[in-house]
Length: 358
Image (tube, rainbow, N blue to C red; front, side):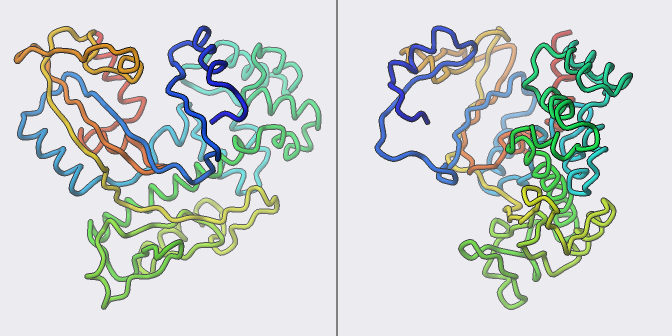
């Protein structure tokens, strides 16, 4: 959404943008506001599938009729050797030296050379100005923190960390909430399966309420929600409530006091459905010979009027093309994980790609 910018000016950006395009603009009298997104539509192609047609049919019917566990996807936790939830946990613990260390310390894994040099300089000298000079691009989180440390000094890490934009700072603690939620929903399903039980939580409007013994038959698993930890939520009335307490206690956090000394980092909490059933689910299996050819039209192809690909009745490879829509804050990678019944983490998929290229 853009305010007081002409469509012509936006379209002009396509001359310099790489790997994506802007288009299909329209003028509206009122802006979109936070919370008004109804969802997202996805088209996903899984190439070189090996399952039988019956297996594909069974997997896709299950996705459409039952759905998938509404885990937060791996992208929620970052792709580096230091997951974002670890930084979030340190913030909530008020352990600011650890926050600084987690963001700036050397780490394993692939990183741009200048970041490696910056981390090495920091580990050697603990001089923020010297480490900052190793960064040609200083708008990254590491650069912003180092700039803050240069300005406020090593004894005022809280103010230094505050240099980082607010949304980026809150990303860390939201990641920790997501990490707890993923763990707790696994325990909930392991303990009680895919059916509602007394003590579970459901939403009535925006208010969470308990499922009572006499009402349990009035709900399905698609109604059940689990809380993200915070000071303004309630927890289930069964074994999982104690599991929340045990996990937060192990992380040196008080489940009964999720307010932080710094208001921005106080967690109010929220509720999230444990099972999501995608809408508008459709699929087809296509055969192809060339692994490099496109198997469906992109939005840009359609805007440019390109005809859809034509497939032979038989081919060396088979691909599954899936279309579905999901509500906001729901991860398509988790829907794909349910269909594939396999790990969809970046690490695992990279290994698969490496094997495929061999």
